[in-house]
Structures are given as C-alpha cells and as structure tokens.
Length: 134
Image (cartoon, rainbow, N blue to C red):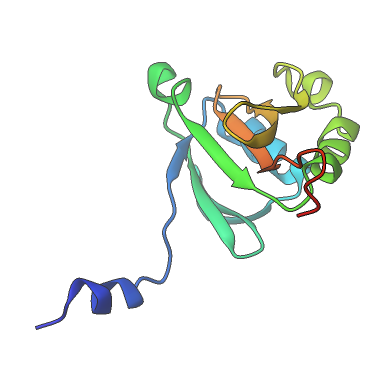
C-alpha cells in the first residue's frame, strides 16, 4: 500500500481552473502579460509562465470570479510592476488599473492586478526591511 508521501511524489501538476467571462478577451489579456497559451478546446486553455500554470475556462460565475485570488511569489516585484505597468492593461482590456507594489503588514510587497473576469492577482515578494540585506 502506498503512503501519502508516495502518492504526493507522483503528482505531475497542480493547476486551478479559472473562469473567463469572455474567453477570448481573457486569453489575450494573459498572453499580453506573457503567459504562453496552449489551447485544449474552444473555451479551455492551459496558460503557463515557465513551469507554473493554470487552466482558463469559458465558464463564469461572478461571485466565484470576484472571490478568487491568484498569488505569484516573485524575486523582483518592481521588475514585474514595470512590465505590467508598461502594458496599459486598463486601456487594452477595460480592467481596473493595476495597483503599484506596496508593503503590506503581513510581510510582502504586493502589486495588484485584476483580470477581465474580476480575478485578483497578487505579484509579491518578501518585503525588504531597512537594515535587512536579505
């Protein structure tokens, strides 16, 4: 009999399904950010940044979308912010303007971004404190 540890070692991927109110618009939004899209059907695609991925689906429930948060822990949130800010996503996709990084009390510096369905994305890194060189 396999232990849970053995089962865990056999996991190949762990990906959430995210809703899209308008599938094609959401797909273009994520591609603009830099996600690679691999279509799996008319309204299903795997979107990846390197080894990290999620599945975008053409299914939408407003309350679900607006209560979903994706958290991306990065090494350089300022670099990600410069990239995101340069895309003018609000003008291109009609989303709320992304919010620049700010130090949050829970120890992360976070840039906030909403996708076309209302999903909130956190691009975050550990806050660098004065005198802390880590």
